[in-house]
Image (cartoon, rainbow, N blue to C red; front, side, top):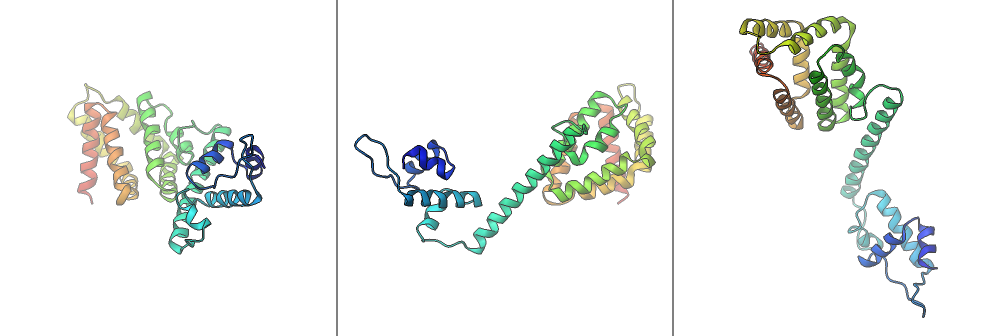
Length: 249
């Protein structure tokens, strides 16, 4: 068999075939007088075995030991493969949901589908900067949290967008957006108290969902993002809310 033929049978490219030769994974076959390589069935079988092992997730550096009988698939190596495949499946499932949401017109491509419907519902009537900040926060959350954690936060966002809280949330959001240089301490303090009175329980649930481990990093990044996207009066409000919630714990 020539290079093109064996590559076609094994489902690899000529470039991949040459790479396997370069790293010693596939022995070089003899050449004819005209310089062309001539592959045997044993070369094809080895190439198919390489393909099977790479499809399972083994790296090219691990494969020679398996091919030559110098290593066996240990429970630890299989556990590592299962973990890697699980992560890939989670990523593909998230991509599938994103594409499905785009098809159904439920959100922009860079927003996690778990949050899209509720976050977009909460955007109505908000200032452009608040809309942008909310979407950016959803991107941070979808990247830093696993699927189970994202589902938990998605339920919290759904609660926030529910008709029972909708009017209150919108009013608080509009008052937040309106805060500017003219806002005095009394106005900021009153708004902080209203946030805690109406949404304190929800905010505590949100904080609890982000506590511990990598979730703590997510909470810290959300806080830094909030400070980067607010004016001085809004920062003061956020700090009052944060201290008010902390004092009630």
